[in-house]
Amino acid sequence: MLHYPKKVWLNGKILDAKAARISVFDRGFLFGDGIYEVMARMGGRFFYEQAHLNRLEACLQKINIDLDIRFLVTAIPKLLKESDLLENDCLLYIQVSRGVAPRKHAFPHDIAPTVMMYATSKTFPEINTINSSVKTMEDFRWSRCDIKTTSLLGNVMANEYAMQNDCYETLLVRKNIITEASHCNVFFVKDKVVYTHPANEYILDGITRQVVLELCDKLKLEVREKGIFKQQMTEMDEAFLTGTSTQIASIKKIDGHFYYKGDEIGEITKNLQRAFLQLKTIG
Image 1 (cartoon, rainbow, N blue to C red):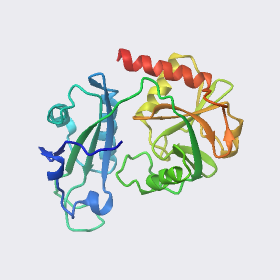
Image 2 (image 1 turned 45 degrees about the horizontal axis):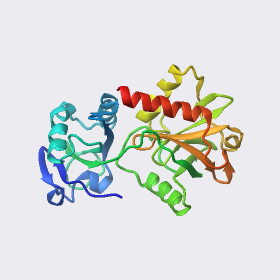
Image 3 (image 1 turned 30 degrees about the vertical axis):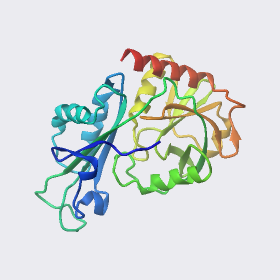
Image 4 (image 1 turned 90 degrees about the vertical axis):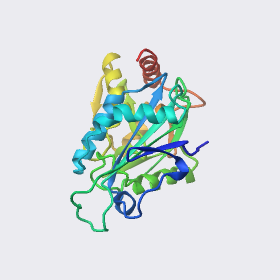
């Protein structure tokens, strides 16, 4: 069940969530002109924290928001303490907008970014046992999906399409090639070879995606960073999703095509889930 956070970190102050306010002229509100990041805290540490912070910094640079994020090293623990989550598993949300200025499309100069963070309690399963059903739809989003922007209307519409069809996710198809999902990356397996779309401007290079590629290397699995055509998905042996909160989740069904019967999960998917669990456990 979703719930609001107890505290919000806003521009250097920790506030009760109900007291946190931003200007109606904030460019994040007017234009979706900002970047966000989400990190999972498990067993007293953030999973691949530095990789997440590196991506946050890189995305800020891509849209020319000048912000030194080193303050997060001390700000995040203070927020967790005030939120009574220092000893609990949780999700941390970080958002940076360009700041407050009169509405104009071009970037304003000499304004301070708006920085907001909050954390909410989250229970992570050791292994995600979801055997998901997903839908496909045309990827009508823009061509800079590598930027983790707060402008997520296309992703929201795609995810709502999944919900309307009683599915977990929607896979996006661009020029007949499966790119990613509304809030996950997607992998396929054929003859024990792992396929996933290359990390270019058409997908977000998920941190969990990167972790899975590392695990494939450790498990001596051949990987081909190559998008598969939509019509090829029925020829695959396995498919799975990856994401910060999703971790690794098996795909049982895409549209009308079933990969498994009952609760069966593919061998490669299970091996990666076990390796992922071990990685979380040993840090």
